[in-house]
Image 1: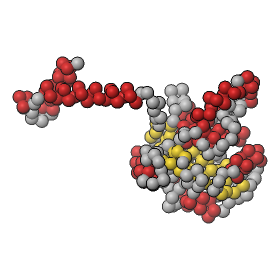
Image 2 (image 1 turned 180 degrees about the vertical axis):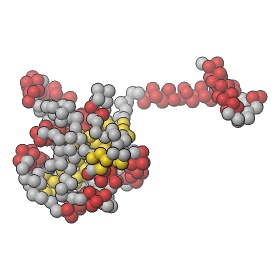
Image 3 (image 1 turned 90 degrees about the vertical axis):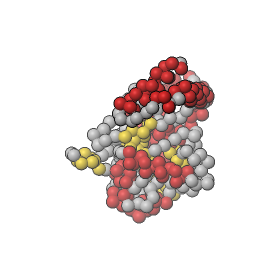
Image 4 (image 1 turned 90 degrees about the horizontal axis):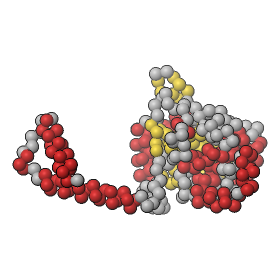
Length: 324
């Protein structure tokens, strides 16, 4: 091992000299350099071996340009089930990392390496158009049970009301048509002093409109420009019953809802559930707490009957968000 390291060090010095850096070979202690590099490699492998005993939680952030936003990369076989989020640029990532550091400075946040939001500070808009009766019946009671939350059910919210929810709360849930842009102007969203983590459960809530050589626009861009830590939205139109299943499963796995898990509630799987209900419940229990939003979304896709028609539509823009 020492001879290859020595050869590598000589090669590095030769390359530096070739590019104009003058080095006196007789003044370089190659033996000492070899020992130091060898020790550094051994320490690295020892640390990696110790860290391998504990499963590492990894998050991947995709930086997508204007021509790649429309594709469901998260559902590729090589990425399926992994914790993935998106961002349009490295500048957006930098802003959110700085925001995370500021958030970690809060004395109430135990883990300084995570962006945490308060589960007791939230608001929701449920069925504002009044025509999603099944969605309202499914989520009205669970939302009412959330301590410290406020919201509107079955009626149209005012723009000031919606603006207040986004600025003053940590979490915002929207169950309705589209992204809710019909209730609040994009300019109002962009000018927010603070923006809550938003989960927009409507059809095509994350779809961006292409403008040729210019950057695309849409409600999602407005939330990004308002420094929203994370937005969950759909890339295309989805069916209401399937997206309701996904929403319930995701919120349960994220830890916001404390209901019977619905990730495997597909009618196509009922016979399998009946045969192994207790075993399935035991296997689901550990994965329902302590997950980030992107991990919950990745696990919630399997709750959809149409796994790729509806399950591939929801994506997360931003950074991993945890509940506290």
